Amino acid sequence: MRLLHTSDWHLGRTLHGVNLHEAQSAVLERICELVEEPPDGVPIDAVLVAGDVYDRGVPPVESVQLFEWTLSRLSAVTTVVVTSGNHDSAIRLGYGAGLFRDSIRMVTDLGQLDLPVLLEGSDGVRAAVYGIPYLDPDHARVALARGGEPLPRSHQAVVGAACDRIRADLADRPGVRSVVLAHAFVAGAEPSDSERSIMVGGVDRVAGTVFHGIDYAALGHLHGPQAPDSADGSVVRYAGSPLRYSFSEQEHEKVVLLVDVDASGPARVTPVEIVQPRAMATLRGRLDDLLEAPAFTAAEDAWVRVTVTDRVRPDSLMDRLKSRFPHALQVFHEPEGAIDRGRAGTTLVSERDPRELGSDFIAYVTKTEASGGEVDVFAAGFEAAVRAQHRAEAQEVA
Image (tube, rainbow, N blue to C red):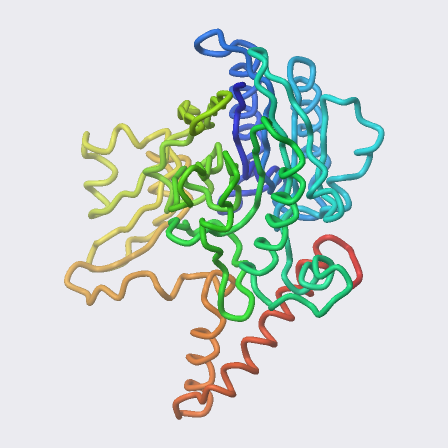
């Protein structure tokens, strides 16, 4: 059986104010072409989309139309299994799931996580594909407790409980290979600057061993393709986003993963590059050099981040840079000889550990070191505000 694993499309996202609809259309076109005409002629039995289809709960109309077009095209030739991520509104993404044809399987409801999509590959291999929608610990710890005491307030607890349910269902399916889609931050994997924090109680990670007994775990949430540690016999992979969403990803080779699952043995994973519609580059130097040096020619059509090192900030800096680099998105001025303080000050508040942020804030306001209790209160308030923001984005009332 061959599967294609992708995730984190983030339809509707912008890059420093630039609309990415055309770029997203281009990479989804490439994914459709791979499914319609596999590179080695082996048919793809299912496409797995592991969450964050959209960038927010109420996406732009053009993004909804792009997803519909992509889903229609893929499902014409294979089965498509989609789960919701932390950026999606699970209710909206899952709307109509009961009306779709069998080749479109939307798994966005907690109650469906141990109800697999049963597939038979072109070579006779059978697989049960389970979708774990993004689990907000504050909700899932009650929903997955089966009426008993709520589970511990952590991603580890709720993802572990979901996998326990899946393993219980698998026990009654001898000879069937197992595949799980999950949207989570697995320990040992490397984040980028463009993922939204899912930290709860100071912790955002789960152990890769939580997927023990699962043949292949198709992960979403982190934007770089990678293979975190996992239990023996299980293959756990991030496909990453098919498009670069921050300059921290400029060195990422964006891919989808072709996953071959045989009747026995470990799954085999082959990355297939998704060529980017536009390159990314980070440039540094004096303005005259940046505007004239042949060394920067390759970046003229790229999305660029520029640091200008002239002793005095040049006039009309952005306009002059755009005369050569029309897609310049970020410009910094760091005079030669100045103390390099890095760019920690430009880190978005939403990307910082709330306990670190709270400690810094309390120390700044009170001029004394924050106590553990004060940081606890700040972190709880921060997490409540983030949840409220996410609900507001999805126009859902708790």
